[in-house]
Length: 295
Image (cartoon, rainbow, N blue to C red; front, side, top):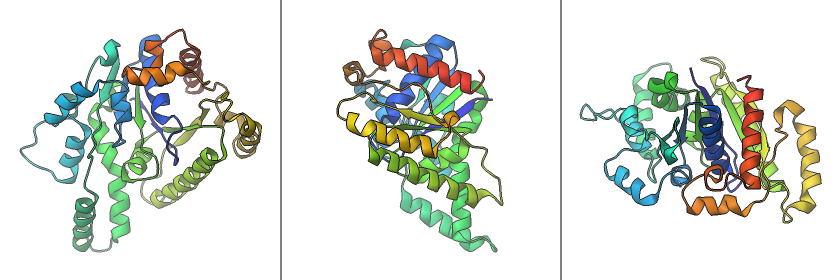
């Protein structure tokens, strides 16, 4: 069964997508792992980091995105014939073993979900709306990935900033979560807020099916940037106080213009500039991750 990892932070712009797609690519290309990237953000950053926009437009017209699978769970339709295997894109960026479940700019209608769960709560005596909602968020992403969970070594889920339904559901379906951060105070606030939310999520599921979830570690992105230099020591001291050594990655990702350029090429930097500083550190980070997981 695959190892499922969510990449999360309450704050946006901390490098979640960059971390997800480069780790996934390194795992597939350099360690011969079979890896699925699942894009849970309506900004579709992970999708467009691995797939050109005009190609994405074609598959979206054919409804071959995550939105189709979510709709099939939220509003089951006997005419929906596509399975997750029909939607997953193989051989992404021509890397053997790297596959993508593309996201969508319109993933689900929260009003329809709320209405459905409210009706369910009225029908199921003894259950509150909150309990019905908690059960639903626990199984939503789990139902998406269950049919293919045995097909991969790793499933990496790129979550949206904040703490919406899909992010909570992804965390609940994961074995581990990664916390990318920048060495600036607001990024650390995002980590602290997320940790509190995850503890509440654990509590909400404690009486039904406790979460089998661990923090894999904090990864600092752009940690040697002059822009953040004056904050770096202050932030690192706070992180060292709040998280033990096993909860922090030794490898950090430096400022590298090649990382930004790779986005314009719709490929990870480990493919577009494999000899760059950023790509080399992503490779080291991947090795550190495998050691942590005893792979």
